[in-house]
Length: 61
Image 1 (cartoon, rainbow, N blue to C red):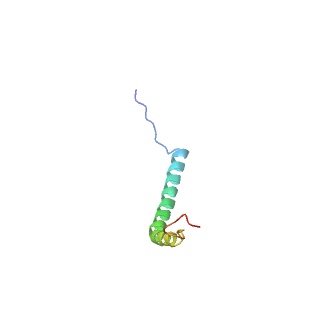
Image 2 (cartoon, rainbow, N blue to C red; image 1 turned 45 degrees about the vertical axis):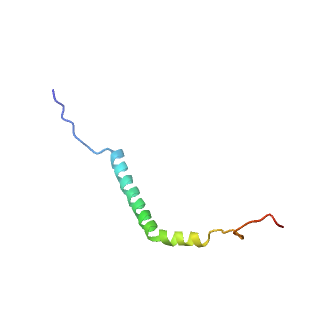
Image 3 (tube, one colour; image 1 turned 60 degrees about the vertical axis):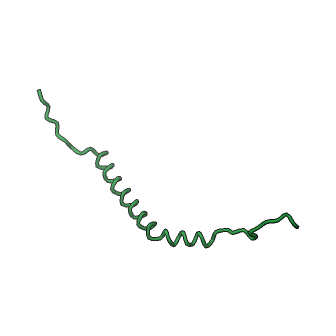
């Protein structure tokens, strides 16, 4: 005896597919913004980097 099962989309299946699509969209937007602005961000961080006052420290007061 063979049972014919109808395939219906479950509520959770539709929800998971929708959430997956939205998350992928958001990640894609963030990745494109970062790839565009990363050189600017790195340049800014290098310019603000803390540097020592003296290159060679001595024990003289």
